[in-house]
Image (cartoon, rainbow, N blue to C red; front, side):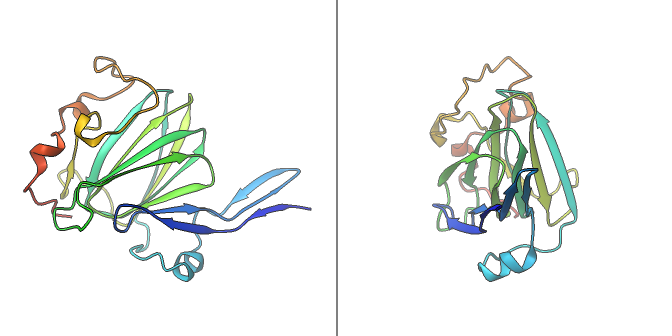
Length: 191
């Protein structure tokens, strides 16, 4: 008899950021996870998903940190292999939850719907973690959006694995050079 986990959602401290448990069916052969079923999202009242224009998968080493990026596109993100730690910060100056931070344990079967203008970052907890991004717009160099330094102490994010600022296998120079949250106050996200 297969084990079935039904599709569920939960809201977070950030307006529009939704944590989703995918529908999952497990039997002796393994597990099938529904990465996306439009009718399930619509029935749950999850708004803001246009048709996907681009889908990326990253593979990240243990301890590797990516983010905090808030482009002007909605993202549906999920770990498809491995385990990670997700962190999200509302960078939308006009949002009622501006500056709020949410963290999520990222395991296969968990997704996060990230609204445009909300910073998305994660740290891999295992070698070879694969993280899928589904975008409602194609990424373009110079597109509207913001970034925030993921190691900014003001965010209060307790990354599970200590990050060495000089180790590029853990954090990119670009992410380290992103502004601190206090430097973003008053800027428009254009998202």
